Image 1 (cartoon, one colour):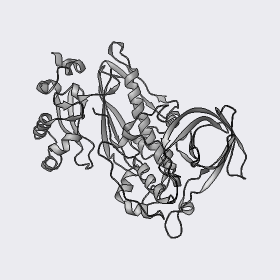
Image 2 (cartoon, rainbow, N blue to C red):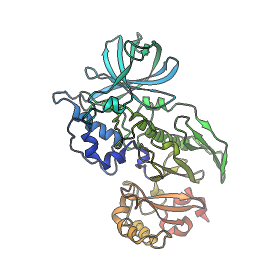
Image 3 (cartoon, rainbow, N blue to C red):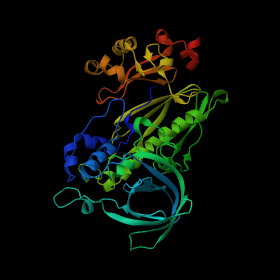
Image 4 (cartoon, rainbow, N blue to C red):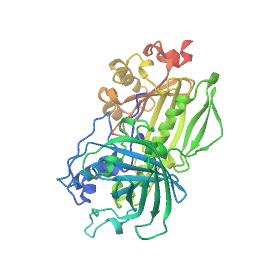
Length: 458
């Protein structure tokens, strides 16, 4: 399977809302909306990030100087004994911006700098929006976010720690002790003189969440998971695990036939699980002004995981060489019913990477990651015999233009290859178009295919 670019790895937060009503949504902001530029098909711009960048640019004074790069430093520790992860910009003359998250929740709380020296820093956090706080009498959103709790922090001599206090405001509430230790840092690109969303890691092209790419998001994912009982799949075993914050069940391989290494495939599964978490946390963060909060009917009107807590993740194929998982879920922060997308992810268990289909099918181009014309022609012909054949779908979807980039293959029990249309903007096009045992299409397969599916050797 090609490196997946389905919506489930993106920030699913309010993509459907923003795209269905872009003029209405942007009209709610006082500043004029800039021109939208579509992202290339093979590379997505996460939806909330796109909207926020547009709004941030529109709200930025014309005289603001652009900064190109800055450093973001992540700290882990506690506020009043509660575990948090905090990230602050070090822009070198640019704006001081940040975010933090309670590990028990996962939502990012935007931070605004009130002042900083070489020895200390003062940050004030946003409070969740409500119509009373964030909507003006004329129906537009307020320009400035409502603010609340304040951090007063001091750097240690070697800058490895931040200590100090947090209180509900600059003058109200008991001061809670803050103890933070430097966890990592990364470079990020600034697009204007102030943009909270320029700080947020965008996760383009499904880049993995690592201590190097985004130490903040990586640290947020480090919470103990609940573990279900061991279950069998052929000669393999697995169990379901669940993050207490997001609750959906996700598979983790326990053992492979012959004692094969499970580390590589489990690392891939963790990235997929974290990516789903990431989407849900982004929905929670949309409860804040800088997270592009919008009142109903355009937004969710409040914090929501976007329905990911109900995602259905199952194994459709598992051996010591190949694994396919199916993930059915929702794409908007409203968490609507029923599932509005079903995605399949197929992995090379030994290689620890998405399965390269050019190793399985003769007419699959490794360089582009796309099928070539002979396989496309075969799929079009096979669809005519498919039990779910539909003439309208055949005319509008099962065509060379759609299949050149939209065709993928997953695998099912008994070594069945399932040919699918994915990455489709039209939900009527997405889904299986052919399903056939590999043993019946050996003329389409490479010699290497038998290394992945031993049943082909007979």
